[in-house]
Image (cartoon, rainbow over all chains, first blue to last red; front, side, top):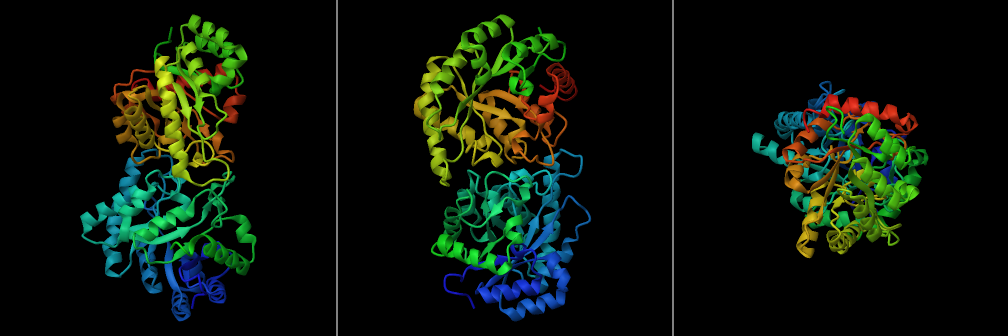
Length: 275
Length: 275
């Protein structure tokens, strides 16, 4: 049961990275936060069956499972990720698509590999009731993590996969940290419509940190202009939760319960009236 | 007079940052590099009139003057930058548009300020025969340096300014470091056509450096896939030079003449047959 004003809030477990899955579930229940975004590593620590039982018994909404993808790396077992998403009742399996193959610079080829990989995975996922959410990552991660860099590009891939497979279970995971700078972002959110399967918020801190992965902050601490993005997402009719996913060494060093207090404060201050 | 294979090569002076303008001019002449991109700071050190005489007497093509812009900062004197570009015979004045005003997150508003500022400047520049080259910067610089983040956005602004002012002296400066990741870049290069007023090359190094401004390398050292971009630029009919602009602490610590040798080697190896 959610606390008043927190009905749409979800904790992505990487925000409280030091917590195990049972600790994160308990933390959400204590804080009146009704949703949780899971990570496969954390699920594996607990064991898939135990995790699925625990989450189902908690009444929390599983807003996402992070993550499948990395299509340019043949060792990734994406069917297993789909099976886990199905077992956990996750609203979406988030796909981080992978970067350039080592030593290569043929970006168009890497992008074709991604589309092919998603098209191969989509029917398998559809048959198990799993939605695939392509997550565009900030262009600074293009070479090493995601050759999908914009929301428009993610939607183009979703369109292509749907045309090829006849399945409509491919959409996007929208993370404010990654997309705020995009001159096309509001138009592409509108285009996405019901294909926004997950909405993650975290702010973009300045200056950029030495490890660019960790320059994420609580809503309101950075430059991403999150309320305007949330308003656009709400205007599409999005009815899902708002998942807070923060990679930040200081946040990770903070006790989890305190992080959830901050998350709740920021949600009420910046987003509760909007989405 | 250019050395064989270097007919299209230009040195952006910030690549040999420790050189004064007279030293950079001499360096280019020694190395058989026929073009130079100037910086206002370096021109000011020499004095505008002396610099203009020196450059004109050298026979070098002035491929750009860096830089005007920063429209969100009212202290920037862009008319003076235009006057300098005219005096120096620069083929374009490069505009770096500026980031978000301090403490603000209204990105659409900042972008409108940029378009307004360029529209105010364009007639003044046109009357002095100066072309304005909007330079999109990598999205990681959106907050602090350039709210113009993609080539498509820069061309949209150029279109808008031309429609408003009736002047056709607004185009783009295309820097491979900033645009290589963009899924639309090849289509937008084609769209740009004759509006590519400056073409700068430098590679995108991985991993991203602690100071993200300095993660630039010689052509071939990174992931930007520069030859494919150069091929697209050549296909537009671009007849200008290819300016090497590298911000990198190791390159700056290298003797200038050695840097020019490396530039020439890389140009011959990767670009001379293409553009």
